[in-house]
Image 1 (cartoon, rainbow, N blue to C red):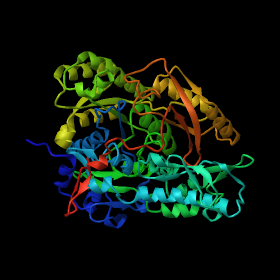
Image 2 (cartoon, rainbow, N blue to C red):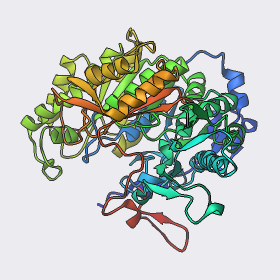
Image 3 (cartoon, one colour):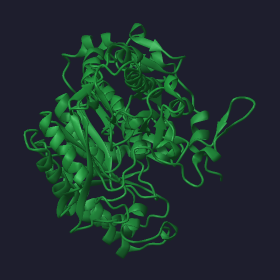
Image 4 (cartoon, rainbow, N blue to C red):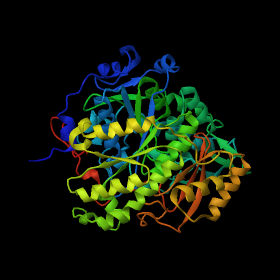
Length: 557
């Protein structure tokens, strides 16, 4: 029997009017800004009405270090939420908005999978409610105003060589990483070097996700450092007069989006795809709102626990005043065997030795969550090739580390496949925890970076290039040492070298530059060879995506 694809499952689903889905959370039709029948934005008036409600239990879903074998973090987030609803709980959840770059590049979409998806899947994976386009336009408006300032006499004394605000687009396009602007004579602007990043690496994305409301967003945009004068003084988006107009472009994007799962569970999808440059969590507004409206609120953070979870706990929870109750770490036997040295083509055979070796990666992530004082539940996303002996080994190892384990079959069975996981998560939420941050904000940038590298990654130490040292000196001069740290590191390894799988030891993390994201409220430490504008693979997902004469889309997954 042919197994239906994710998009076939989504297209055959019965969509419920979003008004009814909102009603499950006590949100009325007048509180919705409808985008058709099945998508809506939530009016800010809802927050004002519920902000004094008690918070529900906050559950974070993270994962082991990603591999080509797949882990299933978003699928687990959706499936766990459906399972909690089946267990009689008032539940909602939040995931990040898909980015068109990876959707047409390496991923093909990001709306969950199988019978644990958010719908309408095609809309969510494409333009959705236009949030990412609004972020792109707001970002590029600031860029245009910078170049116009240079053209119109440069009253701010901007040094064209020290403008740090690049342009963005929501596609993978390596040819635009480094470009020269303003060619063709005086009428076409001032020539200078620049480039493009992907939209989700924009500081505007981070600002949208960390803002408490529209006015907070405008104030954060005002603080963005876009470049420096000839005498080394910082110039902000406020200085060039762009804060108000950029905020206008984001007036709708700042409102959380509401959709549904295949089983009708309310789902917030708002902001935040990449757990490198822009911290990789959905919006604080969606999280805070969901917590007030639900008994259990589930959310995810990008990549493995060394990246997204660390940023969720150290940045988002600190800035948002959030206290998680439990953390789910998603793993697959297949991926753990890859961490143990097996090739992707060799994962169907039982291999306890490779699994045991690869388990060191999961062990490190369990230890990392424990270092924040939080209980962990390991969700084993089950595959047909997993053997009973392999599953037993994972459970035994996790139990030894104090983490409970649940087999998750939410891809195949939806909420029914996550009932055991749901029960164990509810139990974990009742355990006493002592949530704490990894570092104090008052530490120096190098001390904060060092703690993350040594305690979360397992590094022996950190080295800094000359450029990074210059960046840190500049940051100190500007009085920004107290900002939080957002590490930009490869997602494929605990180290900054993507080839080092499992649990590498004795390595040194190299910080090659440190970017100031003053509006977002953090410093971005760029390590290894991390790119802020990805390229397309040899066979991008776009090759498989198509549409027929009836408007039916194929190839998204």
